[in-house]
Length: 262
Image (cartoon, rainbow, N blue to C red):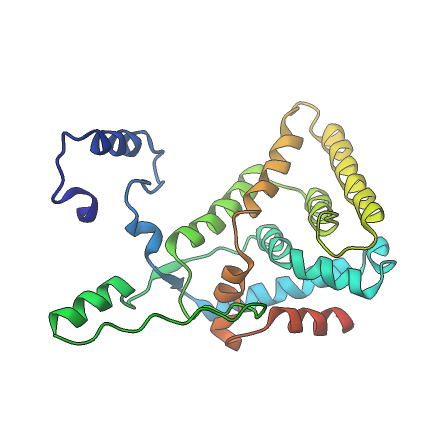
């Protein structure tokens, strides 16, 4: 990349370290030495198709949640708190289960740095910085997701597909994600913690029964869940729902869908 190479001394220690990391990077993985790759903005190649599939997966996901008897026994406030905190990872698990592929294209929209340089070249005032969202209000970014954010989603999907996760395993993973006892504001913490533990136990027993020769599979499946922690829910909303319905308050939409008979 020119921004990492031009104007630098190739004999410097930093350059040597970056070059060694680039050589050690696996095939198909973008080198981490260049910051511009993570700042590129990308969009879905076929937003109507993918967003429609994501909307269908969201409906199926909430239907799955509603059909869990233990979830129905919780107070409505607890149900909403759980769903609002985990709808994004549950959606990604659903996208992986339905094998929804993401094809993206780089956005032609210039970056902020490019706009500033262009404005200075023409003697104009640099564009103003977008105001930060007010505290307590949902964040609806006007920018497309970055290439690194999309790559994190693609890596998660690819990891799920490489493990060939079964329907039962997906169900137990969703149960582990849904019943998160660490959320602030929960009242039925011990009950929810017990449900998460039961989901993990059921997953472990299933793996030992079906995959007797793969002692590491249980750990591999839980490692998949760890990948979800690096994916922001705002990015999911921006990528899969804003292209077709515009800026949306996911909390309001989830409340409406959860209270409806899907």
